[in-house]
Amino acid sequence: MNELLWFFLLVLNFVAIMIAFRLYGKVGLYIWIPISTIIANIQVTKTVNLFGLEATLGNIVYATGFLATDILSECFGKKDSRRAIGMGFLSLICLTTFMQVALKFNPAESDFANDSLITIFSLLPRLTVASLIAYFCSNMHDVWAFEYWKQKFPGTKYLWLRNNASTIVSQLIDSVLFSFIAFYGVFSMPVLLEITISTYVLKFVVAACDTPFIYLARKWFDEGKIKTTV
Image 1: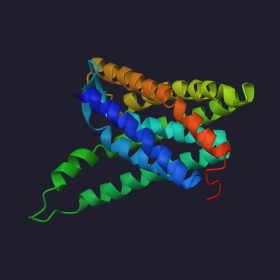
Image 2: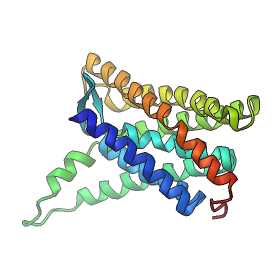
Image 3: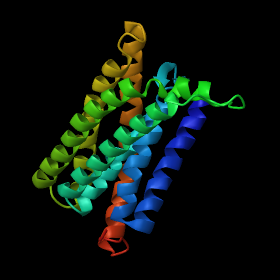
Image 4: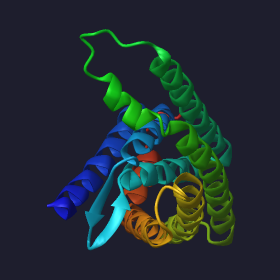
């Protein structure tokens, strides 16, 4: 059942990001980066069994952020990709700050959500540090690598190469940094290694599956169907 839900969530995320790009162009991708970053950092607190491995949720929606920056790099340039990364940073900082202040409030007697909020968001400071470090390193590498491969192999014919060559390595950087910073000491080492490996494998699958969507995005852009101004 988890595997079917995972594939459904995968398709749902790709459809959502393409709708955002088609309707709002560059702005849609700018919006998607904070959305995916915030959702991923909430979902990652839940561990599930997928394909015989223990993994955290949030891998799909987080990985689509790489698709968004790759589309921005392909259609608009690396400057716009880095701008989107900055928006993701800001969203994480705001989420953590606001929720930590919210948890300081004394709940009313009728409150039923405070304990659940504590369970989810009390982990956020550590998750945020892990996310910011992993996010910065992996996304900056992704933007650099995409531009590098774009210069080496220009043209739509090699779009699949620069998309996958940049994202697959970036996902590895992200998975290792985030898992060890966020969960070292929380899980035993065997579980931590399993989570790291499963996280990368799942992100690898997402990266491989997003190739048709970046081609579709480029096609829409070339046909003049995408808004190019903010």
